[in-house]
Image (tube, rainbow, N blue to C red; front, side, top):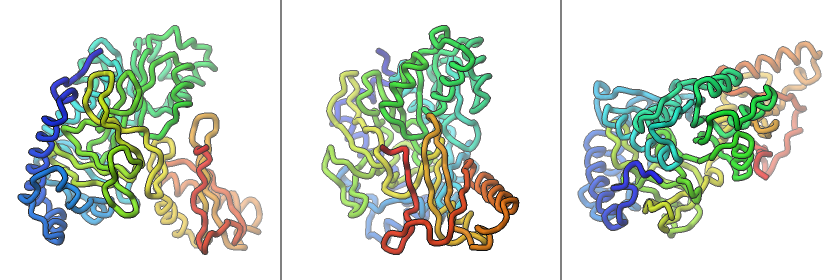
Length: 433
């Protein structure tokens, strides 16, 4: 069994916590000096970074939220001049404006090594051929895994997403041994193989590294059975670094969170109080090694718990369980983050739409499907079919253009969407059984 960085991954907790404190103090001093948002937050709370003398003092610091990133769009949260930023990525935000994140040269190296850790934990070595079927672009997923694989010394195939038949041809011809994509796309690949009559046992494929969307243990078993691979989970988010926050080892008993680079906390999402170890709650992360875009107590909105017991693999790092949902209303559909408020912006700009809608998310086979039910004026609802079809196509196209997701739109009569205490039931997620 390989460990990429045994010094940090297997460090005694007392030593690890001392490193965390030193890095936390340095980070706090730097953001107080370089980031106006943090300086104002600390000053308003009456906090001097020099007063932070223990890790328990972290609980006294203010949180960072997506609202802070929105208000400081695009570069206001950067802690270095733009001339020192060598890479800019972004993720979708709550208002249609993306969350912009930056990396210095050192950040890119840090990112590469963190991803190399969980890829190594999943079994990837310099002998592997890694096929990346994430979309390349502003999304951090593809580049993160690309850098990690190269750091290990593996051969990388930057295939990008889509074109499933070609994905399979590449696997066959290039002798791919490790597949990187969303878990739902892995099932799509498996289905296409079956249609093409390709036996997965005839491939060199042995490992799958899947992330960017929630997936169950049942889906893991299906992927492993249908592709004849070992499927592992990993966790990250653009605001913190991208993929590279945590990842599973061969024992698959939680994702090892790289505590020398991030301090995790679990809070009650309502009271914001830090919860005791082992509690289920919202994950809050503080970065310790990022230069361009440090985050202090960032509320991820992901619901999980932390296990501090030592893993049989020898790593002493805390393990986070698969996320159990979110403390806000963000949805993940085919790896794309979508907020109901984003759809509101689209729908409310169309005068024929009433201010009531409902999102119904289900699975067609293994792929997420989104249906948007919207109440419309009686004029549209009782209009001729040709005009209704044109209206539907216009709305679907606008959703795809502005949000980057495909959705089917269903028109419903005024007042037909159930209300609860005066409010519409916004989301029905049929994927959650």
